[in-house]
Length: 361
Image (cartoon, rainbow, N blue to C red; front, side, top):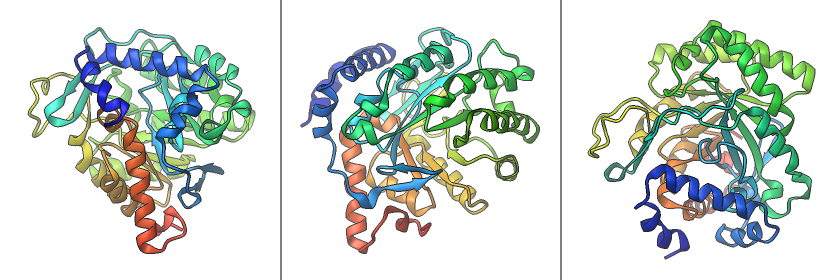
């Protein structure tokens, strides 16, 4: 039994958001220490060069990343990277600081190994994140934290009208641009009114017109698009075509879902986005659909709880993986299980690199 298994019963007796805040504060404190991240590295499996993924002009130490939502304000990158993630994505951050939706707004569905959240992009704002990341001199980081990739997930400020979305994204992207290895345009959270209406060709073209201008002014950065799992096939096909036209560097499949079929928990009727085990099948289906229609890189996220789930996503054509809810339920041991499972599959096949598991060499 590891340390997280011992702590989990106590954490899960707390209100979910209080437990989340407690863990993030502890990780932030550890991140300010020189020693703590090195100690946390002992929980992670040994690096394997076969797991490295070169994508977007970046070298990921391994394909497994931590999804946005845990570290909304970019306070704990060194500690989170020390667990063995190849990438850590912070945010979602918005141009304006905002408190998010009223509490309670985060719910555990224990029987379903799921979460429902309606957080509403609560964060301290892009300027605060930029200042914090600017103080984090990653050239001075050692070990895994010095090698891990940093992503920043950007959403729309609630106060900004949908018609003002491009200007709002411009402000937040500009603030964090120089501090991120890659960025994600999040137009698929169900918890900001009107946000998902941006998942259409015309507003996406406007948003990525802003991205093109920022690339010209600030230097190239990979910018990905995060998609909702609740889109139909025709909508997904249209989005793929638009993404290829407007210069999206990659797709993230998927965000949380509004679907509630088959849930057992008493919290199943809570409004918000559902994540975790119930999303596994749909996220995999969206990945398979997208891979059949585009050669754009795809980051698979949604319902990954172990090595088998990860291998299924790689086999379906994922280039990178992300976990979030699985990490909440399983803790840091999930990182080791996934990466060890991938290395064992490489051994079984006699493969030299992880991309061979999907045939995308």
